[in-house]
Image (cartoon, rainbow, N blue to C red):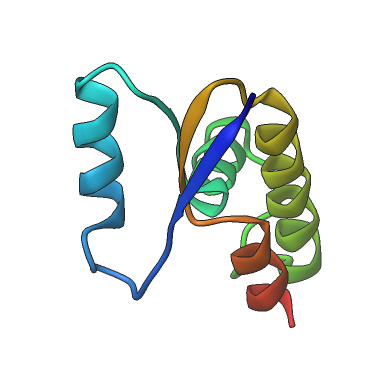
Length: 90
């Protein structure tokens, strides 16, 4: 059985710090999809960045959030969720 807990809230509210602390204690965690997309796009010289191509960025974030959902097993903690990604795009 998969049990999912989403940590959501305002920017700089401590979500990522909480997720890091949970990971340090051995819990399965998923990082914020938007942050991961920005890091990946910058590393590969991609254009899927919110300031360069917002639509492409949203597509990548949503795809990553869906992949995280499917990769879950046991107890999982998420730094934001698919709902955050879709809401940002809107």
